[in-house]
Image 1 (cartoon, rainbow, N blue to C red):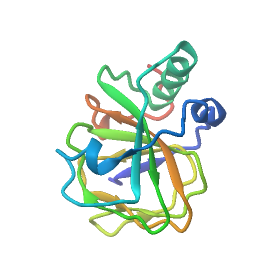
Image 2: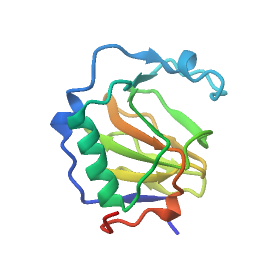
Image 3: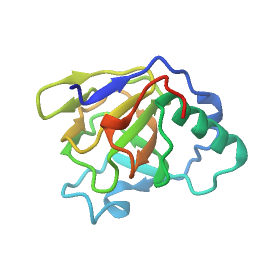
Image 4: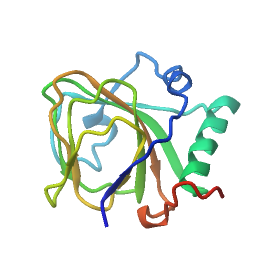
Length: 160
């Protein structure tokens, strides 16, 4: 079984981008209890205010994936050129949804040697070691960490 699913689903990227502010937190500070490496080119922006349009878009994504999580979080991840995320497994999330907000130039890779340069909404098995190779351009994704639904439970196209 692959460790990721690149979908053909087109979320409303314009809507998602409207929640991105110019306030990035250093990932070393925000995730210090989870991260065992120093990376001064990786930044995070948590989304804390979920209004009706954003919640509607998130529910549309869940419907496409055939899931209905109860425990989840959303944020934007930003990796600057030359920054790399080493192999890691996520502590809280069982799977993640990532949606490119910029051109993707840094490959997602897994410990088994699989590499993918995705351009569409992608679901990742975050319980398998994964990382991001150094992009040549700023790389920003909308990220949804799902804490209570396993990657194997995703059913693309089966509305819940």
